[in-house]
Length: 358
Image 1 (spheres, rainbow, N blue to C red):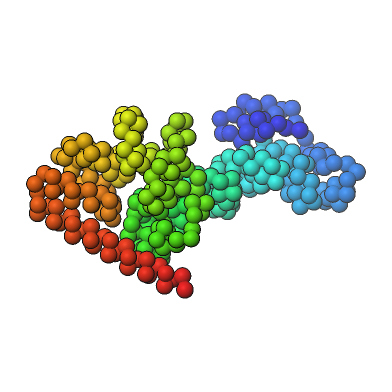
Image 2: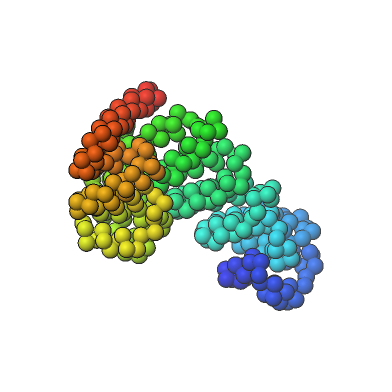
């Protein structure tokens, strides 16, 4: 039986030497390959003669002999390493045999343009979600939808996964893209009204809890939306120690530290953070600078946060305070009105959301 490590090597494009060695040791005819079926079993006795290893693998799979099918499909891949149908069958078989991660890895090597390519992508996404790796599933769909923007379902599913993972800035970008193309649903449009908070927001579905969101950033975003910032810090503390799995987590962690005024931890975070493309990063920095009475710097940081997320009511409210402290009363009045407009829109969105659930 071929080991998992050998299987990985046989699937890699740069392992020509290994493939040549295996092939030189196993130059057998299709009739010989049929010997992989377990003799004396009910499944093997009912098999038709196979013309090649891939056909035999399919027959064994259909007969329920997953180990025999796996051996046969890897022989097929040794003979034709780029065969997408054989890769797809190998991925399915590995998942059936409990090697889901290996199956996902094999499926990832199937080109999008292959006939089974889109099916393999859907399968990878579902397997990752089943493993609790929602953010990784979103990354698969994001890459796929960039290559095939005409597959609208992928774009809608990506929006859902990004929300569940707590990656709200990216989810909002996806919703905005769908909106520009005239494809956005009512829910996707509503999600654009408060882009820094979980969607649905706590006010929209009061009975929902953190378990509806992905552990880590998803739940931390939920706690942030409820004003339970200390719980959000706890949710991301493990990642903060070992390394954030994405920049969105990095950014929100800094913001949560600022909201809880953990300034020593905040300064440590600010020295290493790589999340400057996210509005949460600038909101965190503006909060810190404002608390330390560095109002000019706070204004610049908060303005950048609002530029990236015009719906960030907390940052708008802080800009009101910062502008007042700088003596810029006209600007302060503008942000006061802007904050009122955002709050009003949020209330109206809750009404629309509630009516859509009836």
